[in-house]
Length: 138
Image (cartoon, rainbow, N blue to C red; front, side):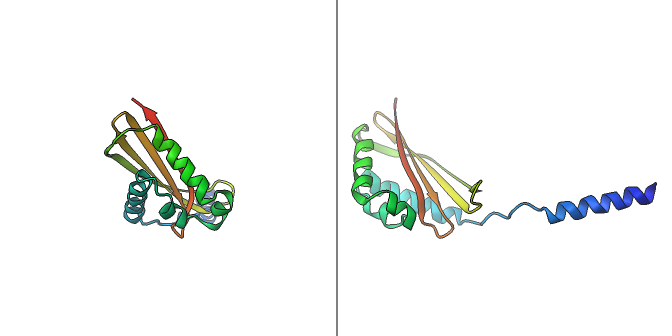
């Protein structure tokens, strides 16, 4: 009985070792947060070019610099006088279908009349694969 239990335990350990979850890519958290803060500064100046410059190729095909400029200008039109950065958050994950690593940096900024959340999604080459801005009135 003990032999069967021991063999079963070894078998379970072997199976769990073989089915080990995919290892996540190790992003440089500090670098991506600092990059995102720089990009927020540029967005607050209604300058989309630095953001567009680091879009990955696929994202560039989906949105032109003009579209990104219009989007930033529209979001900023809701806000009055920028105040400060309230908070930054960093997370990383693996795309559920395609299994590539993704890092996300969210930056919450205070404006006189509300808050703006800037979200940047990065691939393992530190290219932007997703960008959004969302303004919330007080």
